[in-house]
Length: 150
Image (tube, rainbow, N blue to C red; front, side, top):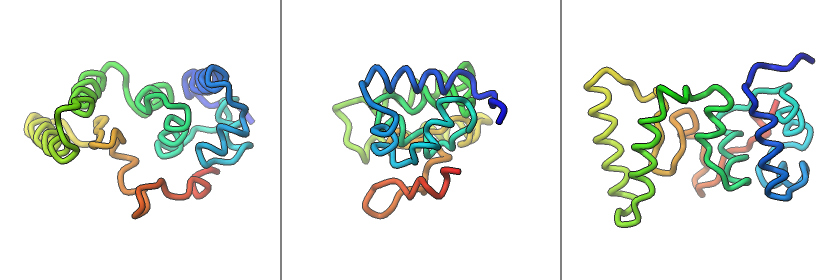
């Protein structure tokens, strides 16, 4: 199987996993994906979905946006300002979740008015991109990643 052009995502994931002192199996279990699938991602043989990247980022306790950029889902230069703006809003400890959501909605409406769409790296109040929205079960957990694992 030939390597896909997913930047250096696999190498980066392997490095982050090792820094977290996790085995491949431990990370796969924590992220809710199969061990072979995670191995293929690390070797550059598979390009994971945004949902899987979100789960891996959560398990590694790193930024999902960083993984999105490395996987080619987000364009680093074009989306950096938007991601940073959203991150600042989301990180403000003085705002409630509802207030953060309202600010993000206002921000998005201004972006639309100026010709940008929600698919341009949009992130919701939980820090997820638009491609991930709607993949959560009612209890707030991610949908079964095995469905997208291969």
